[in-house]
Each structure stands twice: as structure tokens, then as C-alpha cells.
Length: 136
Image (cartoon, rainbow, N blue to C red; front, side, top):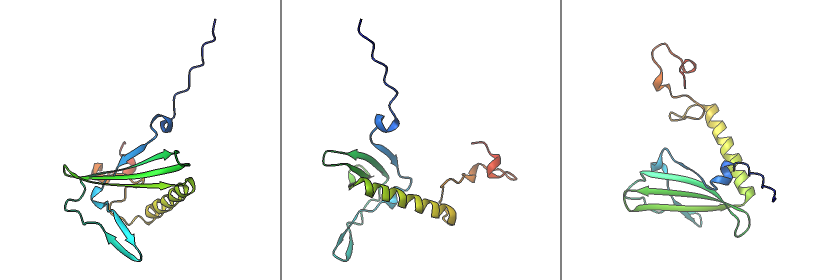
């Protein structure tokens, strides 16, 4: 009698969906530009600002180990913009570290009006309540 194969453990979220994507809250802030020499040129400005945008990250190993950062922006029915940035693992780690530093700096600075980094939304507060007393 053949031995039954051991059931495979449940795949991790990274194995299950190799592309981790999230929508941007402020798609109107998406800009795609190019640099030529020492002059920065913006392509556009677009007639329609994006009404939807998302960022995705996925592994790419067909030509060496790469991490692909993609940005997609959509405006109306036909306006689209797309950018792919291929990063080496070292570059991806540098980007991760840099983002971590910036997020920590913004959270410590706490001067940005739309900062929601680890902060609670105080719109649910009633008079006399503080952020810690409202259930989440």
C-alpha cells in the first residue's frame, strides 16, 4: 500500500499571492516624470488627475533576482499611466529601510495634518472621550 503524502502546510500569504498590491489613498498625488541631463521634465500635466491608483510589488526571477515595483494610475475611462521599477534585492532593502526611516520621522514629527501612521481616527470621539477609550 503506497504511503499517503503528508499534506502540505498552508501557503504563506507571499506564496499564495506573489503580488502584494494596495490602493493609494491620494491617487491625485501620483506623478510620472523623466529626467534628461540636469533638467527635470514632467510629462503632462495630465488633463485628468488620477481617480484611482495602486502600487504592487512582485518578485521577478527570469533575468536574475529582481523585485518589481509597479505603479498604475487611472483617470476616467481611457487615461492610464504605468511605471515598472526593477530593483535588486539590495535596492529593495534600501527602499524598505528608507521608507521605514521616513515613516518613523513623520510619526515622530506628527505635524502632518493627514498623517494616519499608527494614529487613531478621532472622528468617532464624542465630547469627553479620548482616543484610548473608543473601541476599535
